[in-house]
Image (cartoon, one colour):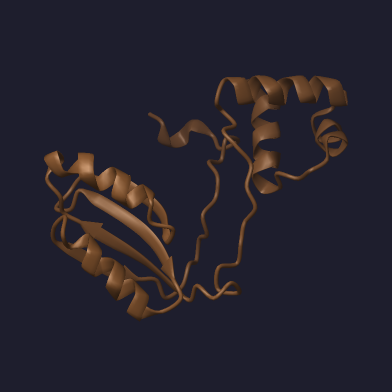
Length: 151
């Protein structure tokens, strides 16, 4: 990726609906040239999709939580299909440490969260943290940042 690609990615992360013409103006290229670059970035899987950011509280999901789950590797065959089918799971990561899974969830209330945790506990021990506030919301990678931390 060159600097123009990085700027395109940065702008699309800020607003995936930015008009092609506006993108072109920001990077000083024609709209067809920017479109070709975006197509290439998509084919190379640097851009893997576009999404709308939703205010989950306005939709009635007042509880966001992180659930740690300790499972043994042999359980992953059963666990992965289970967790993929859970609509309230926003993200699930296999991690290092005392727990092997870190699961981000959203629920309307603590009762539904409790029911979900009960279902999870068939796979192993859990530990849950409920989010009070989010000073840094989910965001993209800063492709324009200097390489100061990559030594």
